[in-house]
Length: 346
Image (cartoon, rainbow, N blue to C red; front, top):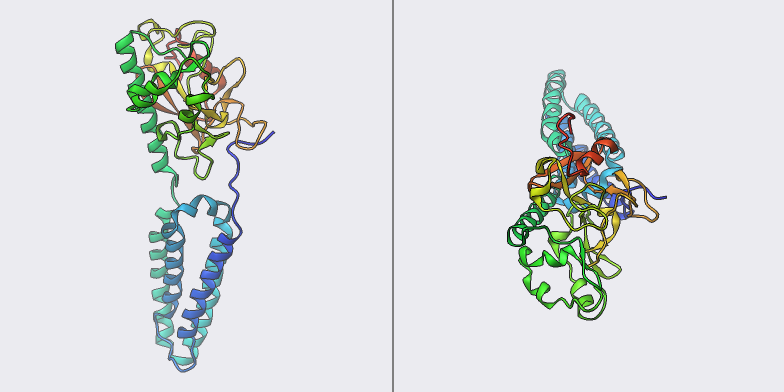
C-alpha cells in the first residue's frame, strides 16, 4: 500500500544548487569584508545576517515553483544557512577586535540584536501558514462553478443529472458541460459509443481546468491519456445519489441541503472526466487520504492534496473545508440526505 498524498520527489540539483548559491554569496561577501587591506567596520556583523536574509528571501520567493520540493530540506537548509552565517560573523568580530577599538566592538554588539530582530521580522511571514493557500482557493472556486452548474441543471430539468446514464453509460460530467461553458463538447459527444471510443475518446483526452485541483502540482493532468477529474459525486445508501436509484430532487433532501454532501474531492481515485465512474461508499473507505494500491492513489472517499483536509460541495451550493480529523461516523451522516447533522460540530 502507498501513502496518500505521495511524498514529493526532490531533484538532487535543487538543494545542491541552493547550497552552491549560499557558498558563492558567502565567499564573495567574505572576500570583501575580511580582506586584509579593508579595515573592519561596526556594521560588518549585521552585513552577514542581512546576507542570510537575502538568500532566504531569494529561495522562498524568487523560485516559488520549487517551494513544495524544498519542504523536506527546510530545517537542514536553515541550519546550514545560520551556522555558516554565525561562523563568518565570528570571523568578522575577530577582525573588528584587532582592526578597531573597544568602542567599535561594543557598538557592533549593540547593532547585532537589532539585526537579528529584523531578520526574524522579515523571514517569519515566508515560513508561516499553508504555502498552497492560493491553490486551495482555486480548488474552492472550481467546486463553486460545479455547484452552480448542478443547480442550473436542476432549475431546468427539476432534477439533478444522472450520475451514470444511458447505454453505453455516460458520466454526469458530460451532461453538465453546457453549464460549464463547454456546450461544444457536449454537443459533439456521441452517446451511441463508449466514452473512450471514437469521437468521445478525442474529446475525453482534453484537459479541462475546472475538473482539476490546482494543489496537485507536478502531477500528470491525464489518466491513461484521458483528461483528469479530481471531483466526484459519492454514491451511498440514503445519499442524494443512491445505488440503483435516480438522483433525488433537491426538494426531496429532508435532512437539509446545507448538511448533505453533493460532490467531494477525489484526487486519489484517478478519474477521467469523461469516465462513467465515481467514488462509492460500498467500495471505498469513508475517511480521508487512506493508502492506495499504487503511488498517487487512495482508496478513501475523500482524497486531497490540501494540508489538513478536503473540500466538499454541499447540496445548497456552499463549499466547506472538512478537517481530516472528522470521524467516519460524521462523514456517513453528512452523506445521508435524511440526516440534519445538527447535533455535532463538523
